[in-house]
Image (tube, rainbow over all chains, first blue to last red; front, side, top):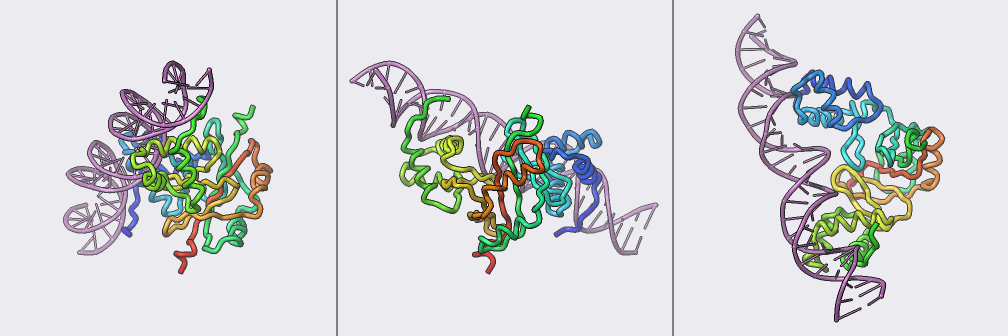
Length: 126
Length: 126
DNA sequence: ACAATAATAATAACAGTTATCGTTTCCTGT
DNA sequence: ACAGGAAACGATAACTGTTATTATTATTGT
């Protein structure tokens, strides 16, 4: 693995994700960071999102449609609105014990999980 | 919505999924069904997988990489091996109460969920 | 058997993402 | 401060998985 080297673009991507709670897509991130770095490339955004995900500094959320990214890595779950496709945070009381619970009925080694809820978000349900 | 009309190809796809517990991808399904229908098209496979999913007769599992399909629709969760990418079933004791649990801390309407566990499968952990 | 229409096979188009490659930026040692 | 090496960049091509298009075939109701 090559030595990590600072980049202003990566810094900016991470700052943006930390300021947001709506789990933007790579494209949304690209459009935003472009205001600070007008000729950043979409490839740079993807490369840094992968790198930051590997480093554990951000979290990638795979759903139907494009991947979404979260700068807040404390364990929590997500909710996807079937109508407007907004992705919201859900904080479970037992987030920490989910793996052990499943481990009881499973012969392999469980070291993580992701939970995605579906339904209608507050805005769409009125 | 147009009236549903029988097709032998769709029947075959569903039969295959019911016989399997390894959650094959569209491509795997295509390769298999081709033994019975040598000139079935990959598009036909995708179209029928979407249709069967909408009808609730099968279940689509979105992960990193290609979508995978499950002919067994009783509520249950899944485990993805980080090493060999095999996808296995996990049966939780409280599968039915997961939505209500999360509903306590969430202002929208939750009507479903999907849980994906990560780790090392029995085969890979030795 | 016939007409209506859903489903098909073949293939093009598409979305999201990853890879390539020549140039720029960052870092380290002098 | 400067130079050399390597990581990161921007531009763009390539790739993967999936959906859309269209002319033909299969299914269904009369």
